[in-house]
Image 1 (cartoon, rainbow, N blue to C red):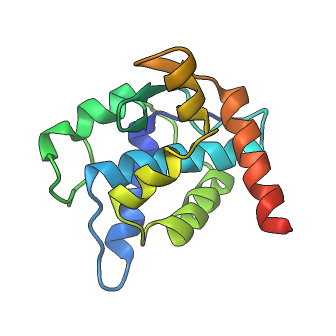
Image 2: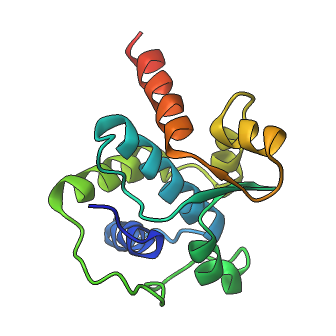
Image 3: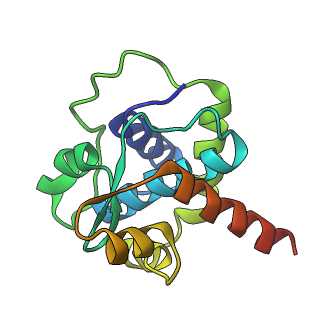
Length: 157
């Protein structure tokens, strides 16, 4: 089932808080981790995207506007508590929790700038949306899936 970006972000924050020692994620890290998890979800379960909201091409990369609104008050400071504004009543299923945990384990050690750089590479979904449709263009799930399918093939080689 698709979830709100804030619900997915709160799962990342929960995982970070359980790290030993606890880890604190910045808004930029959180925004990118949610996007990356959504991308991998489209690769593994294309009929069931992780997010129920569109991603847009903003200047600093792919962003879910509702998540940006929830974290913008933190500036570049770490987020130490769950985000407010999650109106999604459903609980995250185990398959999605496992995917989020795998993304956390693979990517949470990168800084927000490093994660942003990953999403800004030429021929990424953000790059194409930004350059073809412009500022705040929606990045379609098909383009995101295609990109993560390609990443999976590259990693398997």
